[in-house]
Length: 255
Length: 103
Image (tube, rainbow over the protein chains, first blue to last red):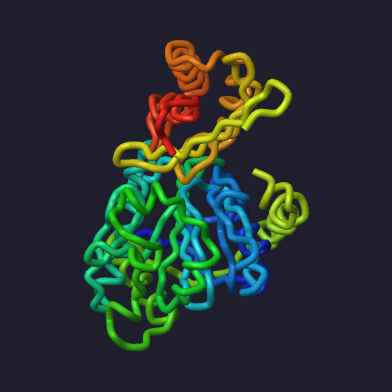
């Protein structure tokens, strides 16, 4: 049975460093300096923009100021998401050519690499289903969104799971274009998303969900996750990325 | 909006069954002076998008030419979109034209 590395490295109050580590790991995996890896992490109040999004169009900066929300851009496409302590992030980095996702079809990557999270959520009692292009839904409401890329010799997939997030803040800090809401026949972002807590009708921690997804990944892909740490080399890469990219407003805000 | 012969045009275009493309253009005399494309789509390789924006500079704001240009971009870069097809880029840009619907 194949073994993947499991890391829980996070910088809850430094979303820029979190994003730097998020890029350093797939770079190391692609270079053969690190094994296939699953990472779990949290951010405090943060908007994470997709790499093609315009900060000025997507972000309500007044609401961000009022709520102490930071804005950071990730290196993958897709839409803006809101992170807080009730949101669990996971990331899977597999060396390119891995038999689980052997080709360059990003839709297949999303489908295949969402299966572990779907299985984990189901094991907790959440009736989760993958919904193309990149969502996990419960009865038509989004509980998780994913993004990913195929670069640096790595197939990379990451997602965030709304476990017990503050949906009221989420609805304030993001400007959701009317055309997008109209297309989905709903009136607000709050009404088209849900949380694991709301679906289960009881308090659940991000740790419970993390443990469920670890089991879900092991079952879905027939692998064993072994707890480990990021290497000095990965941390060094992350610090460089922090200094040159993720701490810079030129990267985060100027698209 | 017009400033000194340059018109600022914009459109938000939702690809059918796909993602949102947001176009912000500066246009003068029927040609694109500069183009900013953004949205929640996926495009691999990610760093190819600025190339498309550059290719659009000085292009006529007409369907036939835009279609050729966008096709040339996808062929030349081997870029692959998810949630957006090449024609969606064309349609989104055309939707910014005065009198077109899109946003």
